[in-house]
Amino acid sequence: MKVILLQDVKSLGKKGEIVNVNDGYARNYVLPKKLGVEANNKNLNDLKLQKAHDDKVAEAKLADAKELAEELY
Image (cartoon, rainbow, N blue to C red; front, side):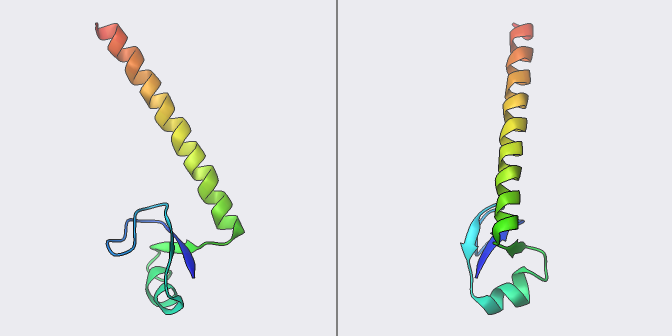
């Protein structure tokens, strides 16, 4: 079963990664503990939108930091 990780999991991967795990492990451990969600079309689209938003926020923070650096020098 393909799962999108919502948190870093030591033996599986980092937040936002799509990993393939055994069905039983996903049903009994990953999903109930809210460490991940099933990688269906809706969740994959949500992940894509979240990554785009994170990139936009990071770009804005970088621009603000560069602007502040120019003011200081």
